[in-house]
Image 1 (cartoon, rainbow, N blue to C red):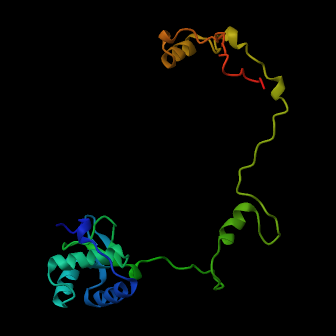
Image 2: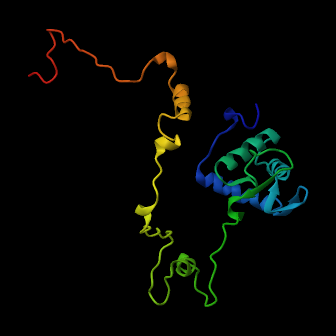
Length: 202
């Protein structure tokens, strides 16, 4: 069975997962690594082969297959992940990063030491500021042109643009095949059975 086979996947409780993760984290070499051309730096990561070797050497896993299974259980529990989130845990030269080593950013501070907030960015854009003016990020709707009613109106029939011009007729022929016949409404007479009351009859 392969490491990605569902039968190879199992799980354990959070307490066991956390203890195993902390122990594995002490055993592997976590550092910034380079890979690719041009080289890209992957910060704070470890190599899959090193983790497999450590799991077997410390008797946390019986063999390589067991170590891969255990690594995938930790990966599924969210203890670590492939740096590009493209691979399951494998006994290969792939880079993995523990969740605690993930860079989640930090809160920026202003020159006076207070935390930066959205208001610091939005106030200049919206006109809101110390004077109390509150603006909006919504674009302003232009005023109605007072001369709009004075524009010349073209006779669409005379210019050949109308619902029944050649282009629209061709379009309708594509939408409604000719074999359907006319689209004009036809009068339909309905005869009611004597056993069923006519609509509206009580």
